[in-house]
Image (tube, rainbow, N blue to C red; front, side):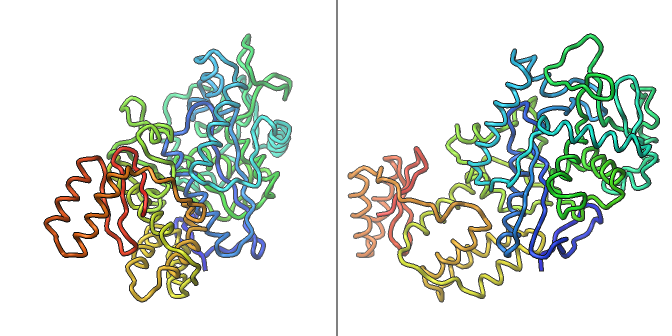
Length: 466
């Protein structure tokens, strides 16, 4: 049995798919106007782990992910510039060029994080016809109305508005500021389609509803998810910042159009904190995958760090925690590389692992079980390796693809380590400590394992077993 926390019901529920053995899953993808940061990576990694969870349990998953390359304004209040147009203006390029460039960077980062490729990756600009058709359905059903700057959704006509986020119409009305668009019927009404500003030519605009314009942010996900997964599907994922207004509006317009339940399970990842603070460029704690690589870390070190936390917890990124994740991952890699031969997956450990991850994606306990397994003297190393490689189908640390690196350890260091091994066998602990200090002065460390010493360089973080 797989249980997940459903944002819609605010409780952990047993997952029951619409079709036996199959899962339809939609992932809110990036708005490709700038580099993604590690907070985005946290969100996409947990969505990837959720997909891997179902596949590890034998389900066939159809994962659909959008690329937002138009329509995401700088303000959630449907005002301000389109983020793509703004980025293009600042960089002196077209919105199409900006979208193409940052989509490529995003997909490269996904590969570095070892995120499985969605079966469908759909761009908003490739689905304008579907969006226009959906907006027209909402107009025909009385949910959509026109103002001078666009077509809006009348939230007062959708009785369940606020059910997902808790932001009811009454609460939103009480907290509403002075309305910038006096033509809106309710402060919570949101744009389905925006008209291009008078006298301004946009890079991305289409003729619809008698004028040039472009889609609202929310309409794209409804149009594309229903095209590829149907009017009712199993799972929708995103970050907690997507709950309102994006997913609330997406749910409202979809159900208003179809008169059907849109999504059965809503899955949201908590915000990522950095050194105890919210990430922002002004605080200079806005980090990308490249920033981590420039400091000698890999995206898989970050993935390991993500595995140590629960997706509904407030994960606090620190450089110290990333360093600890890197060291732990290297130890795991070295164990896999050091063990020869094939073993069998221990059923008891496999059952425990499943019980942890199937309980609302408890990756931290699943990871801790691996270290417990490594200490188990009753299990052979070959069987330990077999179990860990099996678990890694879910964890995604690429352990099965590890290859021994060429020995970068100087002969002088290898000789010192050999002398130290002899001193240890002779129980000459004073000489052993002296040789360790000599090794460390040369910029290397030695770690003693039952499979032999592991030499590591402080300079590049790479390890070699001899």
